Image 1: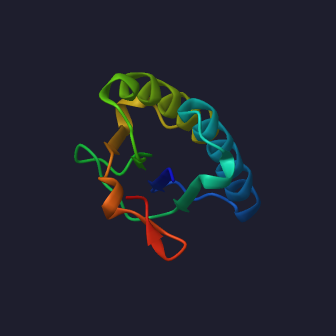
Image 2: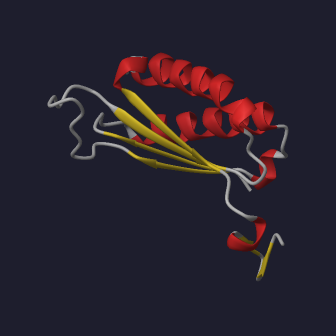
Length: 115
């Protein structure tokens, strides 16, 4: 049930949004060892955002996944930062990433929770 949310102030053409979401979905499934059929990616481009007092290109990523361990976050941070820099040209020092691992009872799917 990984959920990756990407918000950026960079405008992205619709066709490029689909390609980026597909790349992120594939990479998250691979990195987390979960079936891609469980991965959800949301993308919000062209948002009003400021980081460090500047409106230069920036991005906020939020990755929520059951069972996400602190031993995984450094590698995921490197991977996500590289993907953002490659695909959007946003450097790692303009990127924030929030990781969370909810309790199974606090994540629902298909009319149930994962508890």
